[in-house]
Length: 198
Image 1 (cartoon, rainbow, N blue to C red):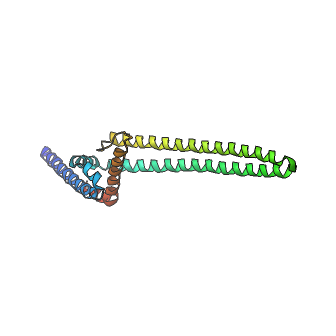
Image 2 (image 1 turned 90 degrees about the horizontal axis):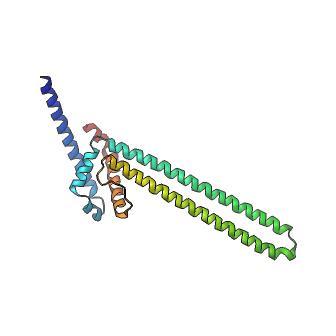
Image 3 (image 1 turned 30 degrees about the horizontal axis):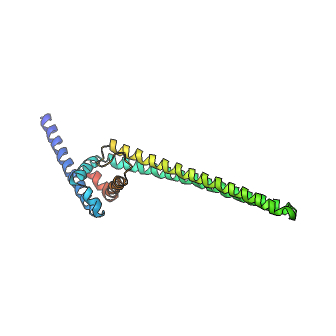
């Protein structure tokens, strides 16, 4: 008798899973219609069905939320680093201007053109250094964000999310961003109703 009850429970669970899969697939299909037609064509029924299967237990929603939080923290940290560098440069420029002004005020008039030429060279050298430091910071930021994207792709691929693998191909990245947007919209729209189906 116990085996029979267990078999009935498993059958009911399977039916609930199928219903949930169908609901997720239907929701995905309706969300896909909001995407540009070029991306609609790339999202086959099989891809959407596989995505719906990956979303069944809700784990992928949690993973995506965690990845989003990590991304926001990373972006905020990188932004603050760049802001600190800009502030250091602003202070450096102000100090240089003040130094130059004081030197010009203390300078004898006949030496002023020589002093101004030297100050101009110094100013150009400082501006060159500032540009190089800003470019180095920008490269660091881009590399860090690229690494974060690759980490996200790898995490979602390991979680079995359809369409995700590590790539730098712009078309594939855009497709993956659209898939993430679909997952987020599903999460925003009906995460609560999805959980109640379980």
